[in-house]
Length: 384
Image (cartoon, rainbow, N blue to C red; front, top):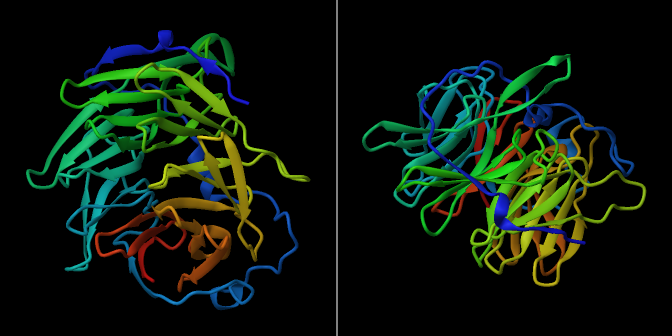
């Protein structure tokens, strides 16, 4: 069931000047590279890519993979601009990076005030790049044509120090993922602050929408964010495994809890996307469950993807290219998966490099799919 909060506790701030953080904290996404328990169904142990997919419904496609210049790059979510260039953060090297498929070359840029925390990256219609610098606590904008960066710094939040009851910790709000609305505003999740933020680019004003009343810190951990066809903002709360909806006009909030499957822990909600018909799709990281939410009927439908391995269990990256076509990275199966909504079937495209831990996924203008390989320090592309 949903519960609603009214708009009267949205707060507003002007962009803050640059400042140095006194304390940085480890955040949830660092867990993505660690194992997440056992599979809920019996399956053979994963040994190699060519053996891992023998039990899966395979599809044919062409892969290319490109190693990054340095080791331990910590590649995160990709975005593709209108020229076909692939952009992504390198948390291990403190870079905002791009890859040009035509010249097969990487460009690596040190972001201003960067603290190795670039998470979400999006390419705007004008081919400029927006990114969330989680540890340095700002929203960044880069114009490749002028090679100019703009930074929009965010406030801090406070919480009692669990190690010393007489002290208070000052934490970054920790922007994690961001999106662009039809008015040109940037919306983003604030993992530490348990809030949703909005940057009005023209004025520089930032509005914060706390997700609880009284306000909490590091309990809800809003993670991923999407915009539906009606212009409403949807997000996942990784701390409570709930789905949230924010009305950008009134500030009203609603929360929804997916069903818990028999014999399983609550689904660990990660990425969220809205398909062209307005359905919300959510990936889960503790089981290979794909979730659909119909906002008109307020109902969830779950689809279980085949799995063949132990270790990292679930689906991470998510993309809806049509109401009938959902694409995802399935780390446990070392594959890119296509889910056919009409037939309710998964088709798997096995990634050539074994044990690569694919994370983010994005579609290029030529309809190819780019993805990051966190374990093998590469980016890859699939042409189905």
